Image 1 (cartoon, rainbow, N blue to C red):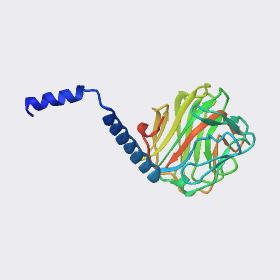
Image 2 (image 1 turned 180 degrees about the vertical axis):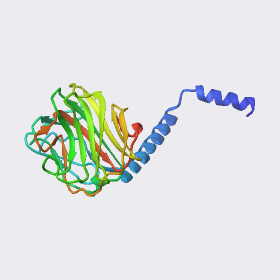
Image 3 (image 1 turned 90 degrees about the vertical axis):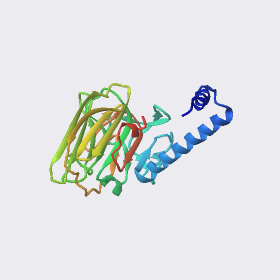
Image 4 (image 1 turned 45 degrees about the vertical axis):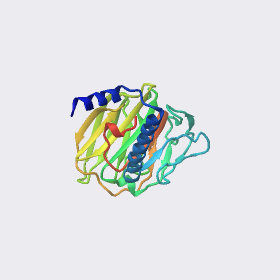
Length: 245
């Protein structure tokens, strides 16, 4: 590059952008975001619930009509951004999502924002029937909070066994936390607030589900005490950059 060309480039970089240049950059950025989000939405997202409704008993699924129906005394409150579902720690109070084949995805990511009180044994999500312990080896979504405040995952594998992953970060502390479960590539991973909190090798998961997804409780009167919002289920492995914290 000639010295004169270098000088021109230096001058351009140092110039304050004009209004037209700024508009072009904004349009380009908006288009890029649209392309990325649109692709992810059509190819990966299976369901997403914001819990922004504030009234009624239904939280609309933003993706494909897999609406979450509030049961018992589950109610609405203010969330981290927008609204949230408030749960009183009662086993009959949760949100139910009807079974869909997307719950049997061979790889998936489940994320949620939670603000849980310091209560013993709580649930974020469950799918494996209406009774506990579950009577058969089926697709098992089991995301719960230990009495010591950290997150635990349990899955059933196609080999007939279980894989369990215990985290270490305490989230039942009255503050907002982002929880992400990632399965795929022979690994089960737990992320808390965008940081890896545990991982373990796993065989492929059993694929024969037929059960509804419970958000905030499981059979046997174990439930969350606090707020849940911004939940999403993706049919793929997402990493930290895909969590949308």
